[in-house]
Length: 386
Image 1 (cartoon, rainbow, N blue to C red):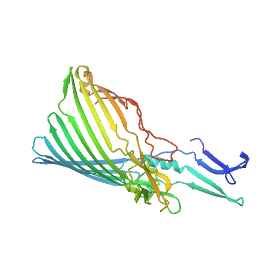
Image 2: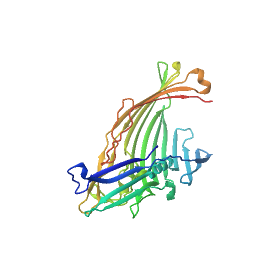
Image 3: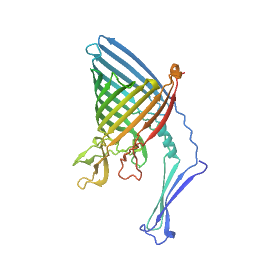
Image 4: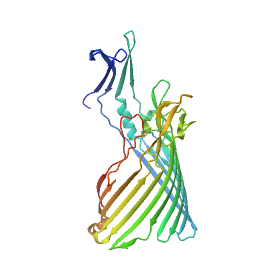
């Protein structure tokens, strides 16, 4: 920025009432200092994997080791998967897995924290004797100042895969427990700090059917896929901006009883029920691959702070907010001309949310801004292997 950005807020000095603008006094001043931002961030990772086969049982063992230069943590994520080919002919397979996954890059949050450190807030409190008390606050810390752990998720998976004539079916159950999510809280002096107290739990089940043998019509080959899924999520994050959220550790009043805030429905547009139908058509004469996807998502429910306290115990009362259902259609056409066959070249055009249907995903009951699902997107991609 070329210069400081200054914003002033004025109010009436006495009882918040004025007979003219001349009676207003300075209430708050926000200064965003002119500055320049440069951040260097590096991430390193290595993955080891071994596959052991004995009879009809195949065991895959792996471990991923990552280190990044912001939190400077070394993260070790073990992963294991066991697959039993029951009859030895791939007709029936039982699969089990246990994996750990670590959180995404913190570079975005470090940049936001640095930008926030350029802001200086000053409030002016006027007393009845005419004096004024000035309070100045500024955020000048980095995420790296808090010795944070990297958020992670432990996942357990069980699956049953079954061949049913020309169709492959799979029933999958997944439990994911996430820990050490980063939150912003206040200390005894009213100053903000970051901690690793965020956590969530998700259970899901899905049933999918994939057509293994395509059906032919007018020189085209088409495969269909169908999947239905259900999930339940709980989290102690009740905002869609959890890394900037103040974590409330007090119990809350919800559906007639006192519960821990971690027992509330998760914040993240909690979708309990989904249906997906897709088709993939190959047109050899034109060298085209045409794919279509129909996605049905039930709206789900999120718990919101009603900003009303229970008269008996003074606890915050949380109430359900129901989201609307959403149906979207995606379409993708890929052209693979013979002249580029040796380099696997292609031209692809993709349209997501073809009919531009959107629903509100705003989780806060007091926010002045509204958020929505993504509308129509059109993209073109060119690919080639060298």
